[in-house]
Figure 1 (cartoon, rainbow, N blue to C red):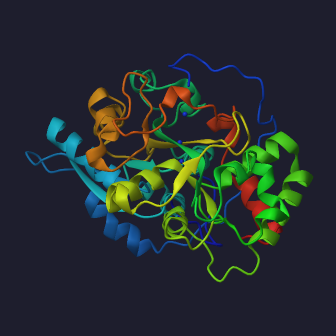
Figure 2 (cartoon, rainbow, N blue to C red):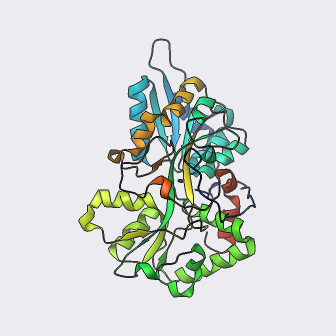
Figure 3 (tube, rainbow, N blue to C red):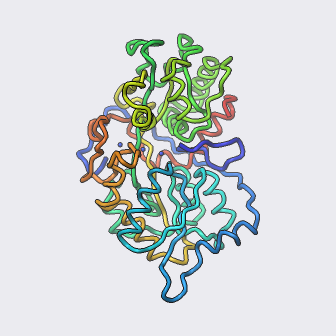
Length: 378
């Protein structure tokens, strides 16, 4: 997941269901919807001019191209781009970066942005751009391929894949029965010196939003202050889920909060025999049990809207969703299309029991950032 620094406009994260049978809703995460404010990152005009060449209209007879600003993991982006180029003959010029930085750049570039499509790892960045009026409407046929709950409420971006928040733990340091079952228990003093989490990671911030909606601002702030006390004195400050996953596996910390795909990726990279950690889920419908959604949008300023819309359509087509489902891409994300299932040995998408909070309710993440900042965690 993309790390967010202290000056970034976005600090909200990705992704499990409306195309599938709906789960029962005995517990709702909340009803208060935060709206996030942004501080624009200054982008030199010269940079926009330099990038413009990548997104300029193709000359007659040349191969058509679009420019993609991608905040997603490189493996996923590369696999989708390769499939789309092969299927359509359209070239995709990729500019990669953290989703918050790219989104801020789009805001600064405005109508001069060379980007045709933005692909974000998490929905809050897209919600922010939507609030600025910078996104074009997604074709209705494309939106129809995905669960409504995981698309833009306004129809300005489409959900592509999903992940779920879990606990990664090292059984040599903490047993499964000792793990918290509720995210609120992360503030319990019994976990002092044992817990790892990345406050600046855009995967953790939706959990903060979910807790805020379920219990209110005062209780959420108290909870964050308890977590801060538990991690006080750590010699290592965690900034990414990858680092947490690696350190838990090496036995440097007992457990941490991550999105599930980091653990599956680690296992694929180092081999099962070298994996000394496990993953566990929070109790069903707990506010810590959050689905993060990766999505994509066409820029209103795009000079190649038809081709850009084709890219979004490909991403949620069976071909595109199969790319995400295939273990060869090392995505280990859940395909959004209900007709495609992951080939990875993960808990099936339809067996997840997450907190019932929509991407619209997650908003643009400003409230979570404010709470984390006030608690001294950012």
